[in-house]
Image (cartoon, rainbow over all chains, first blue to last red; front, side):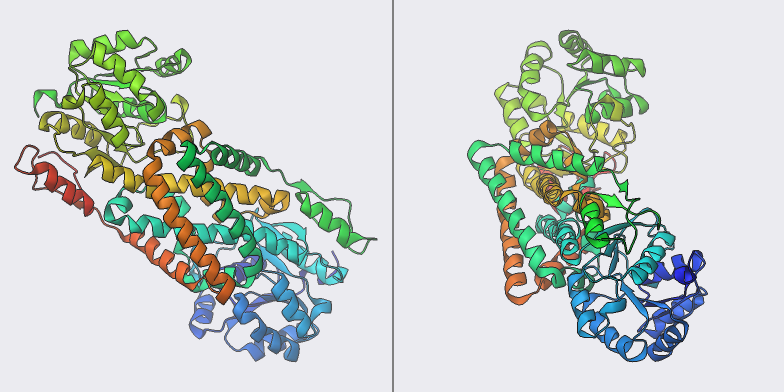
Length: 316
Length: 316
């Protein structure tokens, strides 16, 4: 263990993800504290024994004084506002985030001149709940946690971010920002869009349809229960990638519609979809063990490994 | 209790739904037995102590001799083949089914001259598993069980089918065949189609995307794990209704795509979808208590009640 591996952690935003991260970090032995914009949210966390304040200046000054790792844990639309204060009050701190898109955060970080100490992150965990009341220190256990490996990433902050993710119980998927955003458009943002559309189709059928709805509808619409502002804050900043996969899916559904109309058959869609779900169920994580941060071509090698399903479960 | 309320039950097809029904009926005190086309499937049921044979003639002869309620529990493509034998060997038995569509079964029943003793049914329960091994006597507990109330339905067989559904732990939703088929296109068949398309979108993203997939993708694709032949047997016989709702959903998604492209906004879709999911979560079943089978206009009154969310929890 190097000195900074359990250095302090300062979480900006203590909703579901940030709050769970704060609790997991404390549980893992970190000195950790947080900021929440709403004093009511901060009070809820304090009532549970966590040091969360709505005084951003005080929280950031403490981070600067202790060389804390700062974690941006607010929806994308609120990120730049926080970065402005970070660049003023804690510009030398190592910086990460847990925001649902990576390229827009990285761009905002660059614009604020904070890129040298920044490494993006995104834990793939959540529920349709939000706020401190929904936080869970075990939220990240076994989850994938994407950590950026874009060109220019420095080994030291990268190790520190990976260490935190691992200490929260996650496995780390190394991925470039753009590739991350295209992947999550498929497996996180499209599911939201389809869930909303399915919920709408159900309710259009009135009380009879909703009364007959069972498991397939319940599961298929679960994430439509997420607060609308949060869904928009997750999906809209990734519009370009989401538009691509939405277009692709419209084509898939149109072809299926034509096949059903003309031949009475859904064979092609159903067989391909079943194979795809099998791929998902049988996908195996494998451990990346031979790439050390700072090694020759380490970023490129980690990108390749992550693209092929590789994960980090410990730091070499 | 009238004499026939716990009269024998003969289940044709002992897969997930039929097998679970057989187990639930035995558990509720019925004399019940079954037929399964595959001798291996029949043996699996016998190994668990249930009287299931692959000898259809013997099974139907016993039903005719005991005036059993016959339950057709095979996928739609296999229904007419069974009806042919029912019309030959047990034409006077009361008849129901648990098939995923109602109008096509009713048409086949009419063609075989069996309409007078037929009342369609559809328990809204299932998993992505199939076969005897997946059967569960509690599968129907608390589930909605659609029971047909088309014009011409006779009170006596109707009471018998409702009694069986209630004794299996379900609540009964009275619904006309065509309305049922339109409703399940929305809340059962469309979910299958969207799950297949979502699974496909995920796997197209390769190992990286599948490795980052979490709850929203897992839940949204769950029913894509269902055997393809079964999904086709469920959806394709309902092509007309499914085409209508699929067209509607393509329009909803296209409008959302345009809004995202032009305005960067998913507001309309996300807000409507969230409201729709709220509708679903807060939908309340209410008990129909004042309509007795055989009363003046009982079928029309039950259709109206079912359309408005009414269910039967006991037989008057």
